[in-house]
Image 1 (cartoon, rainbow, N blue to C red):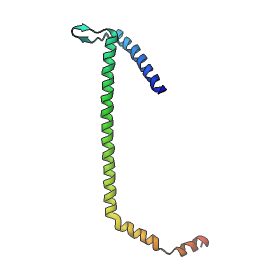
Image 2: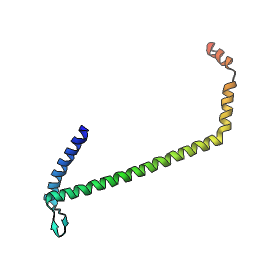
Image 3: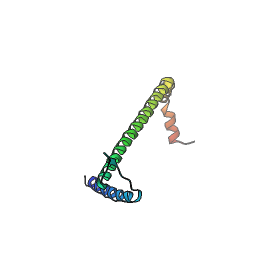
Length: 114
């Protein structure tokens, strides 16, 4: 919570400083009802627009990333199911051969190398 409050204070200070610099350099002003907004109203309106654009960007990024991860997971599961479905007899034979292999010969070779 402390870091969040520090981030908010820093963001407000940066927006204040950069807002006044942009106002001085570019002379950007928002007009509503044929009246110029004060610099603080200008800054507040631009900040609200920036926050809304950031939220929209976050939602789009998360939805695109979520869709890509979901699609990748579905493709992986489909390939896994297809692989198991196609090669299950080979896997069963390999397991059976390993299970019934004569283990005494293997133990003798380990104890008495040739």
